[in-house]
Length: 55
Image (cartoon, rainbow, N blue to C red):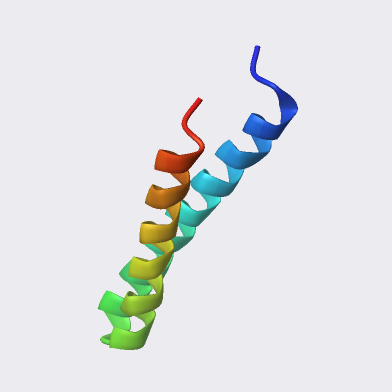
């Protein structure tokens, strides 16, 4: 079983990834580039957290 801090980090990574998907999709539908950019940066942050805090 994983320590409690890893459960919290996993939920943050999933939250960032889900949020980035919503923002990129919303930005693509409304044609707002700044929304797509924020979603892309959220996806980058989720990827970095995944690489750094890999168990």
